[in-house]
Amino acid sequence: MSTNLHLNDDDLVLHYYGEMPTADESRAATHLSTCGACQENYAKLQRVMAFVDSAPAVEAAPGFERIAWARLEPALRAPRRNWYAWFVFSPVRLAFTAGIVLLIGAAFMAGRMTRTAAPAGAPQSAEKVRERILLVDLGEHLDRSQMVLVELVSADDSGGSVDISLEQSRAEQLVSANRLYRQTAASTGDAAMASVLDELERVLVDIAASPSTVTTEEFDSVRRRIDSKEILFKVRVVSSQVRDRQKAANRERANPSTLGS
Amino acid sequence: MPHTDAAAVALARGGDSDAFRALVDRHSRAVYRLAHRMTGNPQDAEDVVQETFLKAYRQLGRFESRANFGTWLHRIAVNCSIDLIRGRKHQEAGHDAADLESLDGGDEQRVDPSPERLMLSTEVQERVGRAMEELTAMERAAFVLRHFEGQSIEDISRALGLKANAAKHSIFRAVRKMRLALEPFVES
Image 1 (spheres, rainbow over the protein chains, first blue to last red):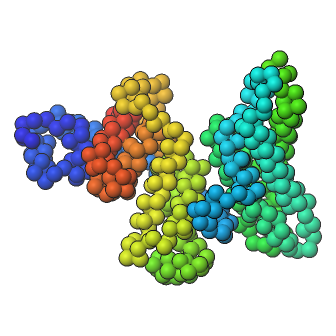
Image 2 (cartoon, rainbow over the protein chains, first blue to last red):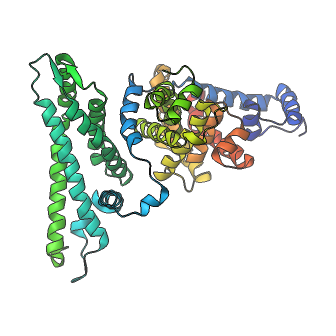
């Protein structure tokens, strides 16, 4: 590198980060000290980088560690499996796999199920069978979540403290499944479903992370969190939508030739 | 609670979940910060934290006790972030020239905020966040590791599984895009 040659943008980046080879670095520094154009360009780079640095890092919310642990703990408790266990047939794994495949495929794009005409007499595709299985699965998940929320909202808190260990253990079991449903809803572009599942997950994690026996005040705070987000109402709405999708899928199964009309 | 990471790791390897919880308590915030920078989204950052610790737990046996647990965890978090961003097909294809033009000419980028507004850190955060959204997963990862984490290009190439030259060019492209997006505000 000659000291007379201007430094291009990439050279300046290397110089800025101190990543230039030693031999080039001294020539670059000499050039920068004498070249107005390069000085100006370098100053612009420095200003942009300073601007980037001035943006505060996004910090996790207070109590994040507790929430992180509540999410993590049920997954850590899951038994470790050997690689070949993935190939072993089990109803739970089948349901799980079907759920994922279905979600990825189409569950949240339910409109397609009623708009796409199947060739008359065509056998039900494996995809549609999986769709139906998943809709049932998702519906059950939402029902179970509703039950936990309803039990909490209507629990008797007159005794000074409330034992929520049962609801807590159920919430814990629901967190991992909810997370999978939410991630898949997001990746398939169903933002509304993903958003409700996200809110639900936060409440479930909150419940899972609470002490098993809470004071009346703490219990009120849990209840207020459920109320303030209207999460129960939202879960009921999506649950009802899922049931409608189930019905549509069942109708399609019963009478595929009426589709698309 | 074990006093050092090494002690906590040793106990966690033996199945002590309290020891692993101590590691989560110590490191989850830093992992979140890194993940948020890498993904630009709180939801994704939380998922990366979860995946990172899950992978770390499952791979504790492979962790060399002489190494730094935080550094090891960071590497896992970087990879989880990249996987997640790739999984979301985050503007990975067809970048460079066309993207640079669109960045230059985008309506949003022409908005001329008052100096008072720019003083607000949340505004700066949003501007920088939006500029970073224009980077590909690899550019974003390389830039975050170089700029915010202070890692050398050599270390970055190792962490991302790239050749040093490829890592360097990812950083060049990232800086070029950041400059195009942010210079109009910085210089105005």
